[in-house]
Length: 130
Figure 1 (cartoon, rainbow, N blue to C red):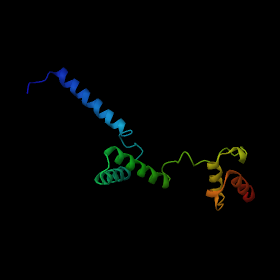
Figure 2: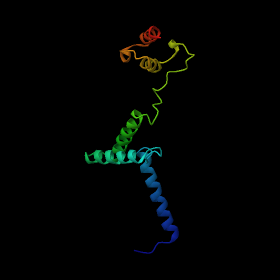
Figure 3: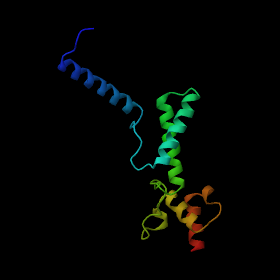
Figure 4: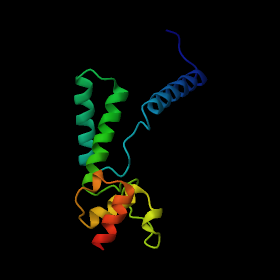
């Protein structure tokens, strides 16, 4: 094998870096979020390895592991669930809020059967309870 010049070595490192970056972008962001604790990282690695042992691709294993860890963080209250956490502006009429906001209000008021109610039923049940 012939010796490489510094320019060639640098070019090869750049190609390797770009390939690595492209692979990580295909698999999502390619790295664990900085907000994760050591326990979260260990759980992620364990789940990823378990899924790979079952024959799934690395990309799919990373996705499943990250989703699982993030779901655990949400249930523990360490990550906000942005799409379903709010009850809307208190000055907004109930009819002007979306169904998710109404269900959250109904949950706070401990209204039973709220998950099967339509929007108008939720509005009526909330008004009766308040």
